[in-house]
Length: 259
Length: 319
View (cartoon, rainbow over the protein chains, first blue to last red):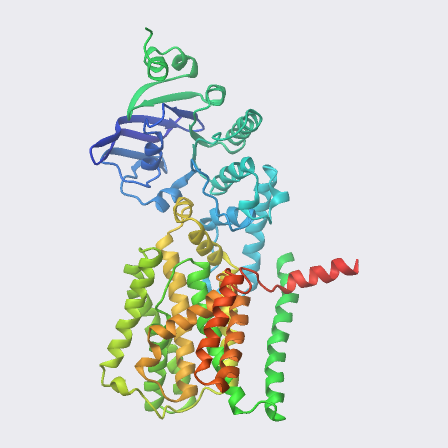
């Protein structure tokens, strides 16, 4: 398996607070990796660094582009997204007043061209591209059972479905890596079980790398092939789920020392 | 090709409506129902529609609160005034449209690149300032005849030309909204951070909407100058920007149909109230306040007239 994302000695300092300190990690092709840690450990900050929302104070981020690892430190969010990064947000960020279909079509923006003159004057080729992209979006929605809600506004969907739509919207970008920021937050056990199935299905069907932040340990232990544990900005441990479950320092960080 | 065939029917319907509108107007003028006073009212309404649809694209669809629309209108108006005074021919008039649009696009790029990073009220103030700068430059130039303004501008913009230009700009804007570009600018309005994470260069797309809106404002300005034959820098001050904004807000931010309705309602109200003298502005203001109190989202909210939906409803009823 080849490395797709490589992070070296990444650091982020906000004022006097070190949110992420000296984090190094690697993600391989088709891997499902979880990132866990207590509240305020810097997980979301790390996500924002990797997706270019905020620039790192120090360290390097490399991404595999045509068989070569290329630095993406100075790239903007939309450029990084274009390379094959998709993400969801901790507090859902759908385009609320747009339909489910439009949400997915926006994610596909960079996969088709219409041209200003062609779309404004409604050339036949405009309808052709529109037809094609609509079909693609519909097919994708059908896989995740969202096609029946296609013309509903995103804000009118139930909470669990909104979460699902956000993931599907990420997939519509045809990403190489999918970042999921607490996808199970606010879900009941039943919805969490559905989500577990959904993530597994995505990984098998679409062959992409998934990096997942999650507090729900049943989900993490069920899904993750490898786990990184973050505490107070530092990488505390890494390993397989069973290794992490028996790691002394992880137990200490979560439960405190045995007294 | 399913989409093409289905849409062909609706597009033909819209075309028929536009042509019918033209001939109804034409007949009413010929039989004398519409005199020059009412014709003037219609032309003013149509020019306001061009202006307000462009502004609605920027505010309602791209979500960028701009208060500088009158500045771009001034550019179009002065370019047409200057060019048609030098070359008083229909060719010169049409050339002035193109030049006006080009100048307005350049101005919109110069204004938009630094200001569109700002949000909300800050952007409004910055664009308002930019429009004032345009007005003051015009006020101090020799070629624009300074504060006195320009008069004796040859009248090439007759009502049919204004009507056709209104149809053309509306088609351009509505088609843009219902295409890839329109979906993208709406996503930028909804959530800039999420749009950016979808690989969308939000600054570029905000600028695109801003420039397109400015270009249509320049066309409206050209028509305004050529139809009224006199213009002065004070016609394009902050009050003009605000009266365009009123049409957009009243009709519904994000509804082109609403913009049409509001422009007609306000245009007719304005004409009818002329008999009331000074009371006019009071009644006008009260009408605005009442609409905003009882329908804060504007007359139509984000509702759009769609022939497709109309067809479907008729079909369902007959089944």
